[in-house]
Image (cartoon, rainbow, N blue to C red; front, side, top):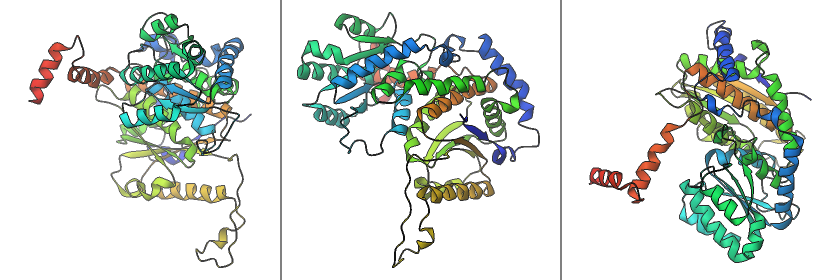
Length: 448
């Protein structure tokens, strides 16, 4: 099978000749530090060789649990936030029917996502939708006390028990949590829920290939064996002994750091397939949370083309030249649709008659690349043969290993997120959470 491929020619040309190659020693050093566990955050390197460590027996256990949920649920709610849901959603949305929520697909349960916000209307409407339905819950939380997820799980647990009875609810509520500690672990053990472990050495944004991502993806009816197989092949393709010029993750990490040093502070992830929207959302967390610290880091943004060419296209074409683009291009769509002929031709589009819609999309992609490069925007291109579990597995691991390398080159700890706690402390103080009395008093005096 082919691998996904990387084309950096339309971006490297914005740097001095040999600039990317000059990063080879730094890339090798960064990758060596990952392999030997000598880099900052070395207690969170469990993702590095995770694909090759996953056994068929473990995948079978996950699949068996997914099959039980699929057989007993019309809908399955995945409760989690950040890395606890974005990876699963990225894969599920990429592979699902774009109108799955309208299509009466009796062969697969509806997969819903919650616990990622505190919107009262959203949660009310979710609970209303679930009334009278046989639904299950996958509660994904290492601690069990993350506000958004814990609040949602409490609501869903009560509703599931009320609608299905406590004993039946136990069979369709699954916990993905810490092995030994935390509120979610205590609850799972007390209630007798089936549970899976989030490894201590894998951070949330790197956890797609753990039960965090694999269980929901299996519940949606997609092959986790193929997903892991793709990741395993990409692990080999980006190994420490692969020559720099042949290692796509090394090339990507080197180029984006070179562009950053040249003043390109914003990376825009671009897709020309709406199904990849949540892949960009996962990527934004992966890179934003990994690199955005110590007053450093490329700002990760994303757009859905051609849609956003009619909103953000002007800024990208002629705005401040602090950006570069990384385009994910799908070589072959899963379906075929030909553009029809029209006798009146009022829209003037008969010149497209008989062409595949994807050909029009590909020419829009090429035309956009040429225009943006001419406008001073470096353009990186990642080609994927087709949207499948195997190639998404490749893409996920490619971005993960490149992120680890890139963060080490940047000189930050790519695996912590100390800044995420700041808003939580303020929120708890404002809500008068026990134990935050001093903070509550200080913040209320500050607000007058």
